[in-house]
Length: 260
Image (cartoon, rainbow, N blue to C red; front, side, top):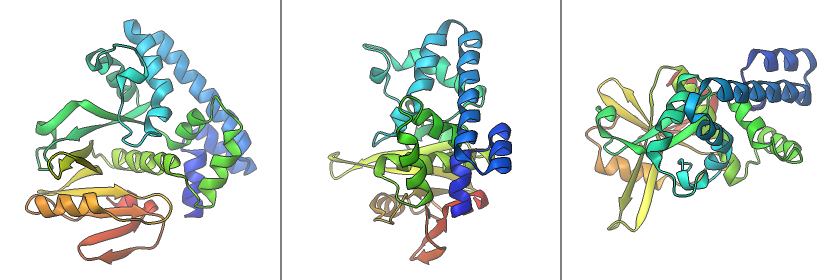
């Protein structure tokens, strides 16, 4: 887990990896990552055509949107009286350029995830988690030691759990999965529950929850499995502790997400 956390902080961009491998210095790797983010901004200003302003706003808001409880893109955070449809092209551009990974709400957790996609409900993750960390602290460098220390020492605060969720999205996408989550209401629509990721595994759908820091309950996963047991396969919880099985739920250390 220590090695995994170090990978989260450095990320996988070759320049940052080379710098850290040579120096073991997070600050020097951080300087490389900031240069990469500046290159991303330059690409957005030159190549995203008429929507470059909205694309830039969306890019700069990735960390703030992911730090919120539901992590979904809210147009009102970027543009007063804006419409989600105006951000379809910026979202596509960021994903197509491999700067970001998109994750849409699939309203029915069945094999046809694409057929039940709510295009107005989307999360935008950074393609590289090391760059997400740099983006998150870009405007307040005083946060850097705090975030680095909390990740290395497994003392993540709630909003910093976005880094764990982002790296799982990154791993699943690298393994060829399209990204979907599932959000639903129960108890007559009063309480909203959400499962972080759904992936196809053969003829079944495996739900995945990501837990940062100390393990907690998994009521959303339990409810989903109870209601859709016929279409769902193995449920997983990815967390920072050891591999174990509890009932039908398989708990995996985060670095084993690469096996999914």
